[in-house]
Image 1: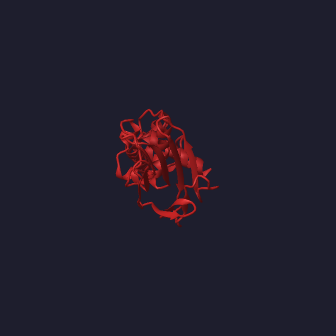
Image 2 (image 1 turned 90 degrees about the vertical axis):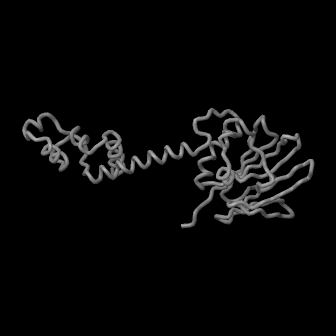
Length: 233
């Protein structure tokens, strides 16, 4: 019952700009006829003696109004922040990135993206990208618009050029890079200390981590490791 009441109050603050409008809506012509005073009629409605709607005090109405406005502004701000907002996306890889953008920006998850493809020099390259870190340090609008192609760089978590045999690895604000003689690379999340095992032969990529293979005509190979972080309480 309490949840229904809260939902009704939220609808009220959305329908009326001011508390006076909310009260006036509940005043009937017969109320004004007998009371002969609009302010008195409003007071009667506010006290709950008359009116056909919910009893809502001015302080509660204004508090909910402010909360609703803050929520609206927050959603608008978030929509402006998301690089994929308002774009028609057809490529499977870009769709996967769009689905994960909000989560990686907010810290709910930290996705590691493995990409194998060719660079502008037609050299085969591969590497692991910390998606959340890239989102904070780079404008992704050109990627979602199709103007640029997302590829691993020597500054990412891991990078390898198969032609020049250039290999690099770098820690990010979200992950440490660990080398395992048997499994190869392992990434350790700095927040919850959980390890992400990117070995394709591993039965599981690790706790709170999901492995997803993405098929895109624009790339040779794509694998995404979604690690959902849990804050300590």
